[in-house]
Amino acid sequence: MTSKKRFDMLFTDPGTLRSLKKPGDGLDPEIRNFLLNGMFDLANQGRAYNLKQSGIASRPRTDKDIAGIINTLALQKDGLGDYIKPSELWPAFYSGLEAAGLEPEEIPGKLEYAEIHFLDGKMTYQSFSKRINRIRNKTRT
Image (tube, rainbow, N blue to C red; front, side):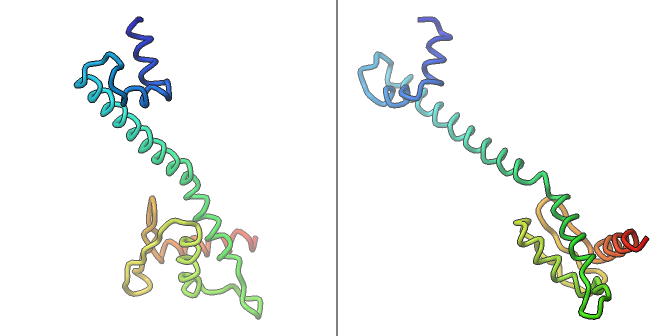
């Protein structure tokens, strides 16, 4: 058996791990343990990589999520038909981030200096307020 075939058998055949656990496979016990540990390490690395990739795959829309939350909030009006003040929308923004699974954490302080940290970024109240006003100005014209 060539070394490539042996490698392929060891690392791609699902039954190989079970067969390595059994004595009598012709392998030296130290080699068997080395292979078993190596396969577990590779399996763990693969699992960690897949989790990391799935996390990455589920998060590329962070900017779109934030833009969507801000757009929705910017266009909200009160009972009289007036736009709701950004200061009143700030808690709703936090709730929207939470609902989107972005794990927000508010940094306490005066409202004009307030910040919300979330996965992959942060938003200050001033930046939030400017974005709200920019969206409203676009919709008026």
